[in-house]
Amino acid sequence: MAILGVEGFSALPRHCYCLQLCYGFFAFAVLANLVRDMAPERVGKLVPLPMAIAVPFLVGSSFAIDMVAGSFIVYVWHKLNSKKADLMVLAVASGFICGDGLWILPSALLALLKVRPPICMSFTAGKT
Image (cartoon, rainbow, N blue to C red; front, side, top):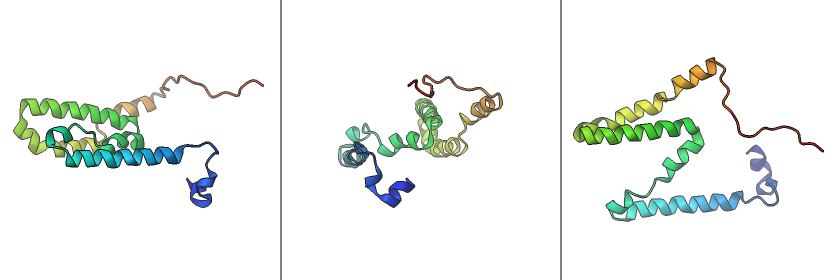
């Protein structure tokens, strides 16, 4: 990023389509937000939020696990007690997000035990 900041886009590789991808995803985000805001509520609630899609890419996959688990908890909570869920869901979600409550303990234990996850590819020097 520092090289791009100093040298500009000319520092990108010759056949890099980074800018085209950025333009495309930017257009998708704007279009998705416009559809979500302007469509009737029954249609708009089915359109995904681009920010919610982008968050796991920014903070890592462990946050995506928390989001799925949290969404499931909210779904069940709404089925059991909708009125109380409407009042408390924001506070509970904030607690899970700020504390990264679901994944941090297993992650710390695995790090203490020096467990290394398997990887499907290896980075070794090729034979010449």
